[in-house]
Length: 418
Ligand SMILES: *Cc1c(COP(=O)(O)O)cnc(C)c1O
Image (cartoon, rainbow, N blue to C red; front, side):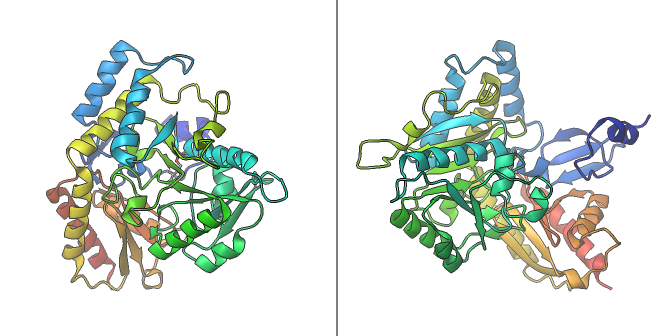
């Protein structure tokens, strides 16, 4: 039985998989089982933030695995404390507390639970608990039941009804629609500072201003889903700071970049008072309110500490900014009938295609068509919606690697011209 047959016989067919078998990775490069070498700008979908098998990450995992892999959250876990301190003091730079999970969707579930508890304490004028979370069209918040309820895309939730109630979706960056949607049960606003799966769309400063005003007026929580955009990818350790450095969020979720490939996620809760300076927000999530068997175990925390320390010490957010500038300069004079624009920031970029200028085989979107062509030429990328191709390179990607990626893009766009 070949691997295709084994897959389809024994693995649930929830993914559309490319017919490629990765066997080895080093830095920005990945090799398949035929020995073909790829420049990897997919990086496990923004996960392998230091590239593949970075020596510091490998060493941290090896050292910790030889000492203690797992212990329960029933006990003290110093690696967890150290990681929480690192994230709070050197990344968020605002007082707060962490909870560790194993994935991005789980981290978002935690934020949703925080919002529900907050709404139980901060009831509305009629004395009723508030529970409604507003999130946005084209958002993506993960595949758990909480995550799909929060997600603003039909295809993600189809057939899973009844969904977790208490979610409203409005158009992203539409302040009037958002204001109109806030009701007596609204308790939080959840957003990606830069929408990833939805097609690489940044939040506007205006929209963040509206969100802040609504928070003040209606006693809401501002929750950022930075699962894809966080920890340096946009040029700052915090994605939201790219758009509103002075805004103070109440909760933030992360995963992906954080573990560099080791599964870990987490959410942060601001240390602030929720009423007349007596009750801190974190007290709504007290003992017994949430948990995870694996979440924040010694091995996962040692891995994430190594990754975040490397990002900070090497100032990789600065590399993200510099590479974006180099990319934008390099393509300034590109004139391809199929390329509409380059979207996004830092090393979370989306090549938006002019869909009607591309003829694609039946069953393929323009984005998928281009991703397949690039793969043939040895460049791994990811679709984001039907007409955007994402670049999510490692944060330590070099000038030469970016130039190599640009040359493959250029020649591929050229080959699409009739
Ligand atoms: C990937 C992603 C998630 C889900 O993360 P998982 O680790 O797959 O559960 C949630 N939100 C955003 C913005 C994402 O990009």
